[in-house]
Amino acid sequence: MTIVLGRNAKIKLSSSSNIISTPGARLSFVLVYYSTRKALLHLGNNATLRINGSVSVKKGVHISIQNDATLEIGHQTFINEDSKILIYNFCSIGSHTAISYD
Image 1 (tube, rainbow, N blue to C red):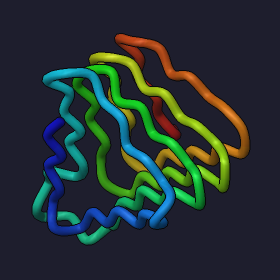
Image 2: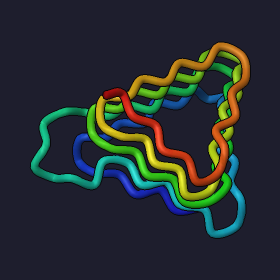
Image 3: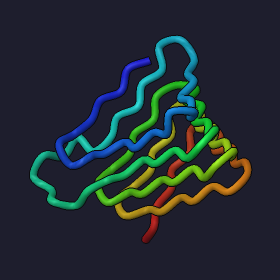
Image 4: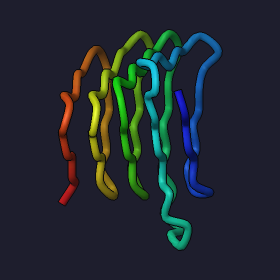
């Protein structure tokens, strides 16, 4: 799996969290360099993120996967600016999906 981070992206992982991916998967996180808005991916204790293909996350996005929770994201998924995703148990975002706050 390839993870590409822009300068305003931050990933916080607990020591017991997992990021699992299919072969060739790619997570692109804030590749716009002129923005000062930060993006955050947080995985709590025993949290799991499954990436099943190409996923693009834009500036200002906050994704928080709480303790013992799982988030699955399908191929060709786009999460647009300022979206907030908070997972307490389980969520599956399908392939070819666009999520936008506004």
